[in-house]
Structure formats: structure tokens, C-alpha cells
Length: 80
Image (cartoon, rainbow, N blue to C red; front, side, top):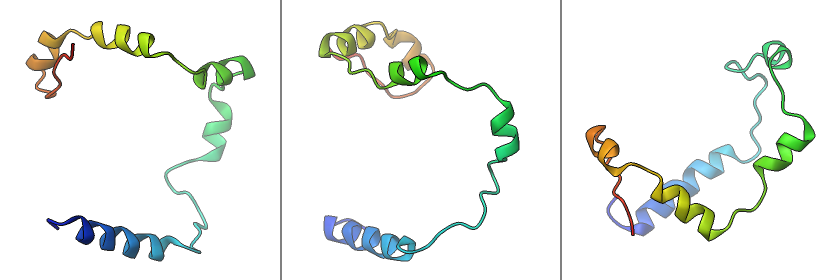
């Protein structure tokens, strides 16, 4: 799968298999357990989709300690 066209073909094959299919059950999710757990109120839900600015992203990125990332071998580098 070296060429983009090969990747495109693979994606199309996978998507065609999924079209029209539906899961009869979700074995990894127990709805009873989910309903008993903590839930977000409306205000918390809206806070998750609040737009952020480029400056906020920049400040968050600056706050990442690049030394600890290298030590953990995540492969991330500090961008300036």
C-alpha cells in the first residue's frame, strides 16, 4: 500500500462493507452501567464544544514540557 490510490481502494472496500450494516448489540457497552454512572449537565456539555482560539492552543502547546515527552519517548517535539 505505497500509493494513495491503493489506500483509497482499501477505504472504499471497507466502507462498502459497512454501508447498510447495523449492530444488533453493543457487547462492549453495558447501557445499564452507563446509566448508573456520572453524566454531564447541559452546561458541561456545552463547555466541551466551546470554540477555542489559536492563542489558547498556542498557550497549551507551550505548557507541554518537551523534556518529559522525550523521556517518555512519545516522539513529540516542542514547536515554536
